Length: 169
Image (cartoon, rainbow, N blue to C red; front, side, top):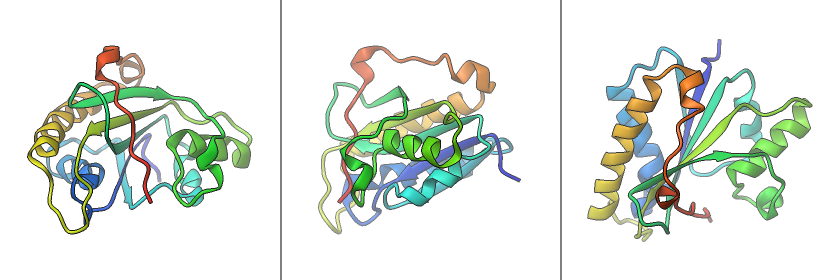
C-alpha cells in the first residue's frame, strides 16, 4: 500500500551537484521517520512517473537549482502543460498535468524543494557550496516531514528563498 507522502528526488549521481536530489533521499532514509513517506529516485522525471502520484496526500519533488540567493527554495507547484511535456526531461508541473490528464482527478498538493548548486561536470563530486546547501535542505526536509500533512501545506518560504530548478539532459 502506498504511503500518503511521496518525496521524489531526481538527478544524476555522476554529474557533480546534480546528485543533490537523490542524496537528500539517502539522508532521509537514515534520519527521518518514514512511516508515512515513500521515497522515489530517478535520473529525471518521466511520463510514467505520473502513476506514482496516485493515492498521495502530498508530493515533494527534490532537484538541483542554478539560481537564487538562498541555499534552497520550497515552492508550491500547479499542474501546467509546458514545453517539457514532450521532451525526455519533464518538469514537475508537466508531470502533474499528465497525472490529471491520465486519471481525470486533481493532482495531489505538490511542492518543489530546489537546492542551489553550481557544478554539473561528469565524474565530479559535490561542490562545497552544494554540500552546505544540501545539509540545510536536509534539515528543512526532516523538520517538514515531522509535521502533519495539513501543516505542511501551509509552509511558505520568503520569496528570496526561491530558486530555479535545473533542466536535466
